[in-house]
Image (cartoon, rainbow, N blue to C red; front, top):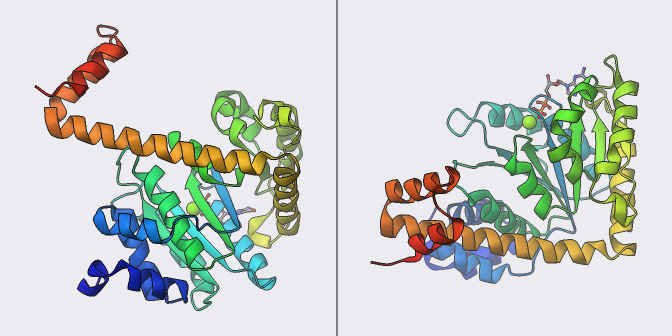
Length: 318
Ligand SMILES: Nc1nc2c(ncn2[C@@H]2O[C@H](COP(=O)(O)OP(=O)(O)O)[C@@H](O)[C@H]2O)c(=O)[nH]1
Ligand SMILES: [Mg+2]
């Protein structure tokens, strides 16, 4: 990054807004790394957001990247610009999976209407909760219509993603029905759309009916959204139009039911809470040192200290 950009976020964001790709890459790096310049950029992109943010989550190997690639192609053929943010919490060092995604997306490499960004979570608690919305605001300022956030479903991460996306697509594979019981508490609840990808493999119909039976668990059911179940074969471009129309219908429901505004409010609250949490953790760690903080957390988890006393200890300055 050039020294001038650090001094002049206004110029940097100005270049992002007129479609300068190098500037966009730099602005995203600054926002991901956080700090003073990131805050300056955040002020300049305040309120910006892509018109549609789709979250794609599911187990490693489910076909999320292949599906994302197909969605990008479909959006591009409708002249819609797309940005992909791929989050990989599993390989912060080797970047193996991310590299695979990059290779796959390379068919769009020369297309100015497509931008792919990989984000390692670096194991920083709350880092993702700040970096992803920040990145999406910058991407919105760059004028992208749609953003797709791809993440591996391994726990807290996909809940974080659900908190910021307009539409959460949960990708499963045939045979997944056996696992429904085990994972229903997490992933099923956040799904806006289910995809049974690899439906060229045996058992797709069974998995679809298992999901249809389980979807009453979705947190949206009570609000009147029947989570659709779409079969796809991402490698053969099968079912992609159906998936896009499910996402569109979900968007219409968001508007008609008033849920879109609710979600945007929740998104702000979620981001705010995450930032407060991160700032508090950082403050306590800086003041007391990590071993002391760890010990306090340990005592809470062992039931030897109340949460209230733990917070009080973390807040005490002397
Ligand atoms: N048979 C079959 N294989 C698929 C399909 N979609 C993806 N794959 C393959 O599954 C593997 C994992 O795909 P990938 O998109 O990297 O999964 P991700 O880890 O969820 O991003 C790759 O070898 C894909 O070619 C599909 O619909 N059918
Ligand atoms: Mg992937």
